Amino acid sequence: MTATHTTRRYRARLLIPAAIAALALTSTSAVAHTSPATAADRTVAAQDHREGAKKPKAMLDAWLDLWNGDSARAPGIISPDFRVHAALLDGGDGSSIRGVDGLVAWIGQTRAAFPDLRFTLQVDPLVDGRYASVRWTATGTYAGGFPGAKAEPGTRVTFTGTDTLRMRDGKFVEYWLNSDTLQLLTQLQAL
Image (cartoon, rainbow, N blue to C red; front, side, top):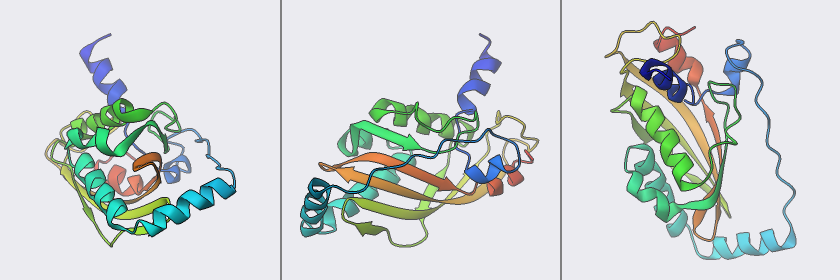
């Protein structure tokens, strides 16, 4: 495998929202469904709620640090059972991204295309029992190598998104991503 092919392959794992599927840039991604809450789920959710918002807030701060390049934060907040629901550039649904190592690798691949990528919160996080949601803005400098991009390396990009996370036993176990990659691809001249 050539270095160029390897670069394209790992960069192809970059996130891309379902809106791009409408533009025929990706295949249809699978939609994950979760089962209704059981009595045990409701008990755990009530316990999490009683513990207050401090722990989820600290976890969300660490989540933001993780996406901003501090991979050392991952083992403290990511469950070995962690799974992702996101439409990927290669048409995948994110199900291949599992656990701490899978998430750290995916973040590293994303940051390879945008080494100085910086995520900031647009609004305060919403926390409801075992679920948390954050709205963010990402800004960074394109380093090149994004499949189909005509933008020059050095192009500044900004895009937005929302992360929804499920918590269990003090760690994130599930992640749904909704990002405005149309905005990103437009800036990269990849449409």
